[in-house]
Figure 1 (cartoon, rainbow, N blue to C red):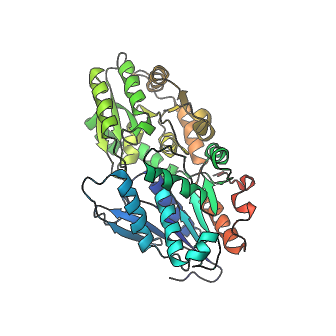
Figure 2 (cartoon, rainbow, N blue to C red):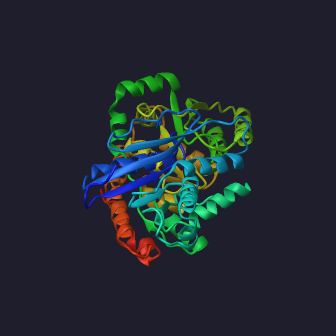
Figure 3 (tube, rainbow, N blue to C red):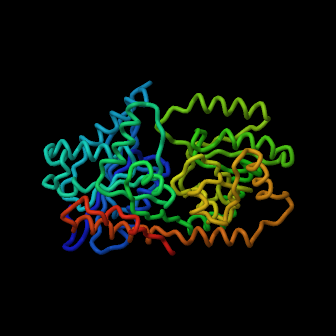
Length: 416
């Protein structure tokens, strides 16, 4: 496939076909880019894990999906799985012909770097640009910084921050963290939000009634049971909340991950049992069914200890649902006054109780409208335009290490 004259051909890379934040971001960005027209062509490269035939949802046919088979290996340690993921994607990926190569996570960034080295080891090691077009200009989105203990993960994480030519963050808070830790100044391009889809979920009364019949009244959280999602604090908060609102159930959706959180999950569920909190664990929810599930919640809990943007919380706001979030700078930046904030389990319980209110109370229409307005400010069209500008500057710049490609002064804020 060759881009039209004056157009831009982009490779976006992600590590999975399953619904995690970075994967959602990749698909939404790809579709928004091709929707711009102007000769923009996008290939999405991904690992198809465990026999996956494609992504968790339909993808705009204008986006070409390059799914690389990645069979499961029983009882494979995390470090070995990461190393194999990088190798399999690197072996399949061909950077030739792309004007921009954009990795969305540390696995895909390392795969791009490995593929570049294999194609042109001398120039790749020196940052030269005589290899395949686009290979020396790897863009990396750093959604958030992690702290790992597994050696393979530490090496994967740090190289994927340091080695790419250009860097994007989805919030100024994370960009500042990257600059403090690595001396790199990323471009800031916020995510978009498919606000219309979640607003439609709020209006889908049949689907909402079906969730209510299945789950009753509930507090929803998305992201599964894992340390970064703050599930342990949420269970403690629900134990306190249910002293007043015994009708409320904790519902946990999502949770697809590469990592093994079995010990944490067992500890959280054991603590929940002692508190007489019985969470309804749904796992990944069908893409079409998710908006109504979110919209039917009494409140949306977002107690993550680390986030890059807070897309799930904005989706809840778009559905008119009150959000209670961990008091993190990045969430203050993105959600502003549309959410309530908490720092402890006690705070979280109080804020959830205030948000959910009494079963007979009417929803706070004014607060819901404010949340929907905040969510609507972030659009994928604006994100795509800012990314396309970055790609074009990279393609035109003879020096891939020039300052403007990673300058904080190039921040782009979506205005709707």
